[in-house]
Amino acid sequence: MSEFDQPQLTVLFEAERIQARIRELGARITEDYAGRSPVLVIVLKGAVPFGADLLRSIDLPVTLDFIAVSSYGASTQSSGEVRLLKDLDASLKGQDVIIVEDIVDTGLTLAYLLDMFHRREAASVRVAALLDKPERRRRAVEVSYIGFTIPNEFVVGFGLDYAERYRNLPYVAILDPARQAGSPERTPGIPMSGPGFSPRQAPVG
Ligand code: PRP
Image (cartoon, rainbow, N blue to C red; front, side, top):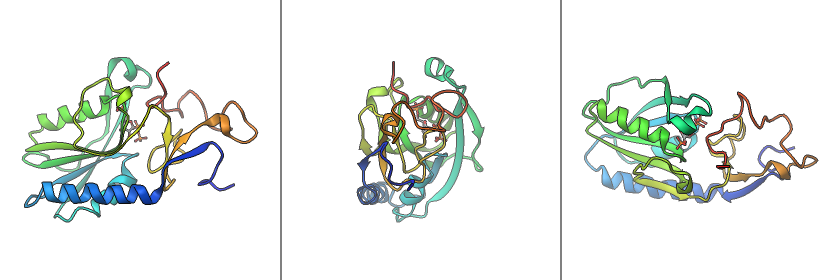
């Protein structure tokens, strides 16, 4: 069966639409940062496809860095605790930083990164996110460049995963495991809880 065409996936944003939107965001960033050399900080792993395309649509001498953060499992939902898994390679002091995210959900990850980058004395910090899910917000964060605002659905594709799967979809889709052929309850082989399951996007009960 094709990984890109499955019954549990309902396309929300087609590949062409995403690419067109990213070009628009890139043009805006090019204009806003004229004469400057911002550093794009791509937040691993989900922001990799968005970051790769956004980077190539910015007509400026940008530099690139990567950071990885994670939560302490479900506790993050209540405590807002975020853990640094991989730090940046370079200092941000005096830099114009653009944080690149695939999705802003509760805002806890971004709040952590914004605070850390300001403490590191970045000259400026803005955020570019492919998707914004404002209904889930728990921390107010300003997102300067938003691709699409989405409802409170579990979405996958274009970097977003479900138990590490579907990141390679060239489009964004709503995942409905109940629509998996032959399985009314769940997607076979994909845990609904436990270490492989990311609770980040799970609808609030
Ligand atoms: C996702 C996403 C953001 C964060 C957003 O990352 O990439 O970094 O969650 O959620 P928040 O607004 O509720 O903090 P995740 O921890 O799932 O890691 P991944 O990018 O490696 O999939």
